[in-house]
Image (cartoon, rainbow over all chains, first blue to last red; front, side):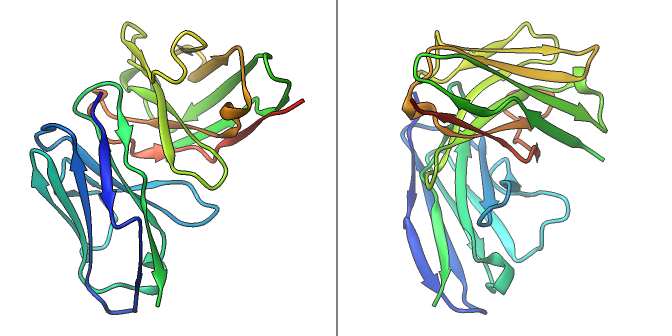
Length: 107
Length: 120
C-alpha cells in the first residue's frame, strides 16, 4: 500500500500570508495526487486534481505542484474563507489513501 | 446539478450490521466510479471502497475487506455499502463520493454523510 504523509500537521497563518503544505508518497505516484479542503462541519471539496490541475470554480490563489513522491499545495494569499483542513490523496493505485491532513488556523 | 444523498446510518451494537445507501442524481450514474469514504470523530478521511460504473471492478481498504461490501443499482441510481461485524472503530460519518470515468480520477462530488455509531 502507498502511504501518504503531510506536513505540517497544523499551521497558524494570517490573512494575506503565503501558505505551503507538503505531501509525500511512500513511492512514486507520478501525478495521481489530489488535494481536498474541508471546513469544520462541512463536506470535503476537491481543489486540485492530477497534482496541478485546478478544479473548476476554485480560486486561482490555490495551486499544486510536484510529481513522483513529493507534492506541494500553495495558497498565495490566504483569505478568511481558507481556514480549513487540507488533505492530499493518492489515486495511483488501490487502496486509495489520504494523508492525515493539515489544519490551517488563524494566527 | 450533481446530488448525492446518503441514508441508513444510525446506532448499532458491536457485531451488528448496517446497510448504507446513497441516492445519486444530476449525472449519468452508470458511467462513473463511486466510492465510500469515512471520517471518525475528530479524525481524518479514510477511503473505504470503490466500484466501477458496471460493477465489474471493486476494491477495498484493508480495514474493511471481508466485512464491508460495496454495490450499486444503476437502474435506481443508487450506491450501497453493506457493513457487517461492526466494531467501535467503525464509528464515523460515512460519505459517498463520485469519481470520474476511472478510479484514478479525483472525488469531485460528495454527499453530506451519514453517521454510524457502533456502541452497546
